[in-house]
Image: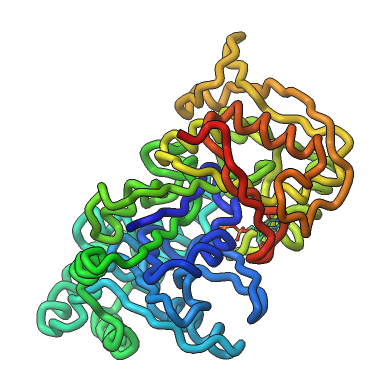
Amino acid sequence: MVRAIVGANWGDEGKGKLTDMMAQESDIVIRFQGGANAGHTIVNNYGKFALHTLPSGVFYDHTTNIIGNGVALNIPVLFNEIKSIVDKGVPMPKILISDRAQMVMPYHVLFDQYEEERLGKASFGSTKSGIAPFYSDKYAKIGFQVQELFDEENLRKKLVRVCETKNVLLEHLYHKPTLDPDALFETLMEYRKMVEPYVCNVSLYLWNALKEGKNILLEGQLGSLKDPDHGIYPMVTSSSTLAAYGAIGAGIPPYEIKTIVTVVKAYSSAVGAGAFVSEIFGEEADELRRRGGDGGEYGATTGRPRRMGWFDCVASKYGCRIQGTTDVAFTVIDVLGYLDKIPVCVGYEIDGKVTTDFPTTQLLEKAKPVLEVLDGWKCDIRGIRNYDELPENCKKYIEFVEEHIGFPITMISNGPKREDIIYRESKLYK
Ligand code: GDP
């Protein structure tokens, strides 16, 4: 059985916590897309961790954690991350790395920086982890799969060929130092030593695991609105953030994905550039940012302050639909306990017309939020474990959101810890 955990919004919905929680009943946890450009924050018995590349199952000794072929694998970053958790007392996790995963090369990180520098104000707000240059090369068919590390002769030849084209850009477009294929080869040989014990034919491993009835968890990064096809293109990430892509980025049959838990955050936050219809500013935004998440809404990878906004029913309804949601996990609702009144965006006004259907990017730029204001509950709801014990106005908020997005909210997260979770039966459930 395969379950997926994915985000409905712009990322940072609290997927890490949900994955850590659901990993408890999983044999295998897989990262299937993205790279070290985003991070999950997990709080558990060992402490507080920001994971960027490692699957969130690494804290359990019964899980196998897999880096799937769809991931942008930065080998030194992965191994630093493993070291950082082991140094904090976590037992060495069981890890497998797909032989088909491609590697983030040192020059991908440089190209990311140089391009953002060149674009200046028109930049994408990249985290400069090399992700966009990495995926560009993957699809231009000049990327390097892990298995290529084991064929030295062909690796050398390919490096010479790739450096020829990279060096033209470095010299003439960016005016930066050029690449030396021999030095790169040495670096890759270091990478090989690091990954060798973990390399695996992952799709075959998973095929067998499925036959044995193992529980598999696909862990998504970012959210629907950052998907290159269905998101706010071009202000998106470079690999698909959708559960469907889990089949490809891990190498499993699509029909095996039975449960799609879409994480929806009780208010909005976003990083990077792009239209953000329900965005708020000034003191109102600062206060929500300060109180948000667990210790404020600042990027797990970059520490950048996140852009803040009210809950957006239009974006979340779309985000859930495009994921193929079976269950919504509604998170960080405890944070809203300080508000007397809570505005919610229920529609977009575009050229004088109100819609609840999320538009394409050009129209999105023109959209103005239609807000409805709900009453707050004005108390701390952390520690509550039963839905019925939540304050009336908090339940109204949850039910209002459920009605507007049209997908069943079956889990409510009211704190950063594993146990801060309320299960709920939804009337929307089939
Ligand atoms: P992810 O990328 O989707 O995993 O999101 P983040 O790592 O940015 O997680 C959001 C932050 O919120 C982290 O600091 C979590 O520890 C925290 N968090 C997750 N769920 C909850 C919740 O229900 N309440 C509160 N207050 N914080 C939460």
